[in-house]
Amino acid sequence: MLYLKKANTDDTEKEYLFVRDVPADENGFINEYHGISRKDFDDALVTIIANSEGARLPEGYVPDTTYFLWNDNEIIGEFHLRHFLCESLVNGAGHIGYYIAPKYRGRGFGTQGLAMLLERACELVPEEEIYLRVRRSNPASLKAMLKNGCYIHHEDEEHFFVRFKKEV
Image (cartoon, rainbow, N blue to C red; front, top):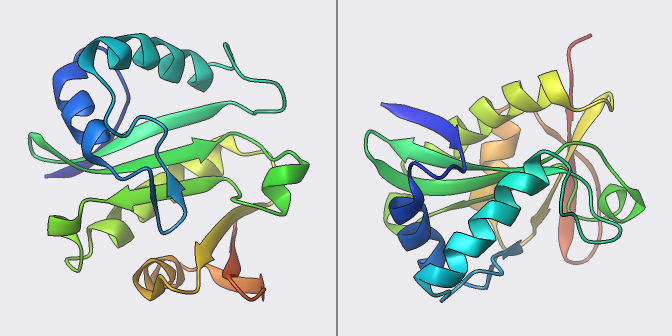
């Protein structure tokens, strides 16, 4: 069964093993914990959870909840939901970022995980639209967004800036 679950201390070992192996930057998904030690991850997890509650945020950052996409008892993806936009997010990464482990790509997990996260975003995000950004070199991610009812708002040489209209 596929489901999203917030980062938490009950699943620390599996979260650690997943996050440690996510590349530092893949298709614009930035992982500052690539290669992290277990001890350092334990400390980072406290901050990750606090960030979702609006605490321990670096200057200029907004609350950001980390979710893991689970397939039964295995983590197969990581999703981030920024609770609202600041100027750098409006013209940058937007509300949502996500990563699916390579061995699970091409099976619709990104599309399904994004659908679940968009539902949560519609409940949490105050803006009328959910903002996303995808590199032009990542057509699979763009396809997942479009399958979920997103549309291309605008583009530049490197990115598509995508929007999802919340139902009012």
